Structure formats: C-alpha cells, structure tokens
Image 1 (tube, one colour):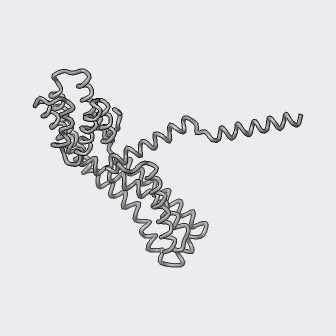
Image 2 (cartoon, rainbow, N blue to C red):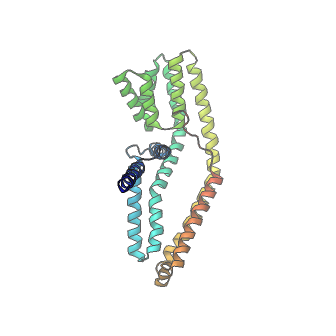
Amino acid sequence: MGAILGLMLGLGLLLIWQGAGRTPPRRRATLAAWSQRRTDTLRQAGVAGMSSRQLLGLQALAALVSAVLVLVVTDTTAIAGCFAAFGFLAPTALVRRLRHRRVVDLRELWPEVVDNLASGVRAGLSLPEAVAGVGRRGPASLRPAFEQFGADYRVSGRFIESLDRLKENLADPVADRICETLRVAREVGGSDLGTVLRALSAFLREDARTRGELEARQSWTVSSARLAVAAPWLILVLLASQSATLTAYDSPLGIVLLGGGAVVCAAAYQIMIRIGRLPEERRVLR
C-alpha cells in the first residue's frame, strides 16, 4: 500500500512539474500579441533595429539607473522606488512620442507616394517597377523601404511576397491600404488602377488636413495633462533637499502617500489623455 501511495505521489508531482513548465495557449497568444504591438510601435517610430525584448531590457536598465541616482542624492528608498517606476516607463514614452511624430510626418508624405505610383502606372511602367521607383523618386524618409522592395523583387521575382515584406517594414495602416490596393490590382487586373490611386491620394490629403486641425486643438489638453502630472513630482524633488522631508517619506505613512500619489497621477493622466485622444487608425489589413 505504501509503494502505491508513493508511486501516485511521484506521478502527481511529475504531472504538476510538467504542467507548470508549459505556458497556457491563451497566455502565449496574449504575450505574442503584446510583443507584436510593441514591435509595431518600434517600427512606426523608426527604431527598426530594436526588438520588444531589447526595449524591455532598456526599460529595466533605465529603472535601475534612475533608482540608483535618486537613492544616492536623497538616500530615501521610497522616493527612489517612485523614480525607478518613472525610469521604467520613460523609454516606452519616448518611443510613443517618436512614433507619433513620425506618423504625423508620414501623413503628409503618403499622398506623394500614391502620386508617384499613379505617375509610374500612367507612364506605362509595370506595377513592380512603379513600386520600386518610389525608392528613387519618392520621399527621402520612405525610400529605404521601397529600395528594399526593389531588391527583394529582383532576387525573388515574386511580387506578392515582396509586397508583404514591404508592409512589415513600413508597419503603417496607410501603407497597408496602399499595398492591399496594389495586391488587388496585381491579382485581378483592370485599367482602373490609376483612377483608384488618384482617388486614394485625394482622400489621404483630406484626412491629413482634417486630423492636423483636430490635433492642433487637442495639443493643449495633452500639454495640460503632462504639466499636471509632472508638477507634484518636481515639487517633491525640491522638498527632497530637506532632511526632515526625507525622513517623513521613508516612514510607512510616507510610503503609502507616495504610492497613492503615483496611482492617482497615473490614473488622472490616462483619463485626461483618453478624453482628448483622437481615434487612431489600426492595422487591420496585415
């Protein structure tokens, strides 16, 4: 009887160990989607050489450096912990800012890309030649991606696969729309491609003009939110020069106060940003 119980116990421990070593499918899918979103954000920000894991490592390094610097200056663990959290979030905030700036810049350039494609098609170029020609005549910031398309197509001769790689390199909703239009034109054919491209160019120009006006009116909301969040922590840095203040914040009540203040600031910032945020175009045509 004892041998049977021991065997059952060993089998149970083996099953628990095997189950703990496997990531559930739903969790794996969630982690993959999170990593893909971060990778898309990096590409849209123009930081194509960095992966999601490298960004996470950079966040950990920034948190460590911030904590050490603040701990050396203030000798207060609670304040150092708060600024470690700020340091952890700083790289992603910088990437989002770069992404927003690049998206705004590209919004003005996509109509020019479409006009180049329409001109190439009108001049009698084949569709792959017209797309590769954007790498020579298109906007300077987009030329590398289209030059890579031309190199891929010359090596493989497969237009659809080269177009898919172009979409991944650009990682932009407007680029997805343009590439899918070219894919349909390649597979279905027809003589209406020039008309479709001209209509798409006019739509993109109108959309860029409208969003530019709305973002100009929205900018004061974003600036107010950032100022409202930064002000209490700047005051905390100024107060950190007094030893009595540092001692108070190292107490349990001070730690609770700092933690509550950080949660309130983060929640208020997210609410203000969500209220003033414009709907962003998502990549639905991957």
